[in-house]
Image (cartoon, rainbow, N blue to C red; front, side, top):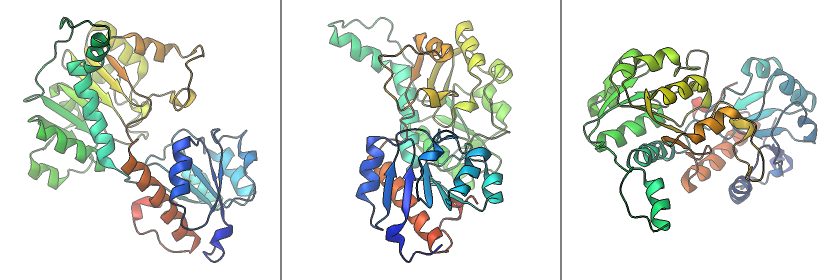
Length: 339
């Protein structure tokens, strides 16, 4: 691969939305030819790729060994994720077929952290319900009772860039902040965060916010057993990956009243739902329908990342990653290169 002649390089984008096209077209200073597909990348849609050395994918694209073999056969050289998570990519298969894989490790940690806090405030103070009531000329306060966030204990699982940003916000509200990660962050400790075991997070937190990646160790970290350790009326927030929560266990926790509030911006089966307008369809997923039926559950459709600043960074970092790989140079941010 060489950057000479980079203007002839084609990037095939999958799972694209209008905003993807807008931002990637706006910041295409390198003259790449861009091929946008609204469909998800999977074994059936890989056939759409024509003369593209680079494939750009998002969180719900399927990049397993079958797809990677198809990409290699089409002479694809680079898989560029325009997101931080990479649990949907078979990295061993990519190595086997000599494909480079890069990602955007930090586009705007503040965007996701702020959305997590917005979900907490909305669930607590019920501003979404108040908005609808007032529009119907109902000015009664019954059913809108909340609690002071000040002084409450917030537990954070995962203290990467987003978890760290969220901790600063929580500290700003006057909360006691507990955190769990494999490596304790000394800067956060200086700020007043206490690192404890994950069991202590479950037992002591009024609010638990998930900011860890999805892997074999973290899958279903919220399950029947962990919920049993939690405080009555606990609030759980997930803006990370849907698979961190065992949906059936959370539904039971909500039905029993153990879980007092649930805010999710991600969902285990979201690839069949999110980023689409299904307003005229009958949704076949009984679990998401059940979750949305609870008055104390707030669901947003993977929107936490969705700010102007974040989309700008996603486009710029993705292009710079690709440029570096085509020039056979190291990517400046080592965390961006996966294979």
